[in-house]
Length: 254
Ligand SMILES: NC(=O)c1ccc[n+]([C@@H]2O[C@H](COP(=O)([O-])OP(=O)(O)OC[C@H]3O[C@@H](n4cnc5c(N)ncnc54)[C@H](O)[C@@H]3O)[C@@H](O)[C@H]2O)c1
Image 1 (tube, helix red, strand yellow):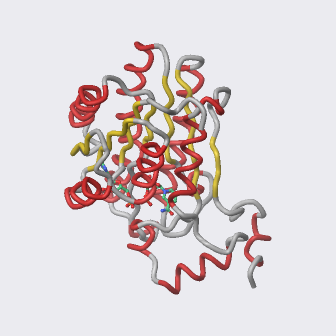
Image 2 (cartoon, helix red, strand yellow; image 1 turned 180 degrees about the vertical axis):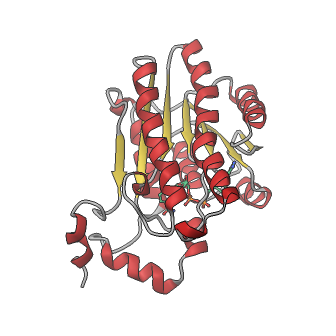
């Protein structure tokens, strides 16, 4: 990708799944990469698997103080942050009628407030230095209803709206976009779906399978690059055409 070599990249939720694949891709592009993740086990594993990372930082993105400290640590390590991959997120599979106030607060705190915390902290730095790119991980659940994920859908809808508002206020200095993946085969997905459920999902996706995390990482790399210099304020869906045909998609592999 043009213009990525030598950039400083911060990836939240970078110790697993889409985030780890994205950290890997930016390392391959010749960037310095810091990862932020709250999971100690995942941090230990990613440190072994990606020894070239500039830092693996412990922080919970829903806590503004931890975000400020983590961001400062990233700046201390890399000198600046040119690209933020604002990707940490969680999901809980439960029926709408069973969602507790605590469930709701937790999902919104990580998926929406966490994205805001990291985005605002980073945007202030980028505005001061005169450039930057912020890429938020939304989801096709952000503009489509999925049963059992009402709180998650609401949080991702918020990420999409936040992305658009930020892009308008921060242009032309900082470009802000969101990626909405469909189903991606990651530990998050494996935690809540049996093999039978994964196969049922695959049958309704015209491409016949889940995305690989590396395929989402490639879109992050493009959107961060000079090749995407005019791209801002948009939501880029990568879902194997799952949501393209509405109900028609249901019949693709039957
Ligand atoms: N897997 C999918 O099918 C899919 C689809 C659409 C969107 N997404 C989104 O992609 C992003 C990455 O998901 P994934 O599938 O790679 O999941 P994952 O569980 O494999 O990785 C998420 C990482 O984020 C970290 N994390 C969670 N909460 C955090 C917090 N509060 N502070 C810091 N780190 C935290 C976890 O420790 C984990 O390492 C999420 O925002 C998710 O909602 C995933």
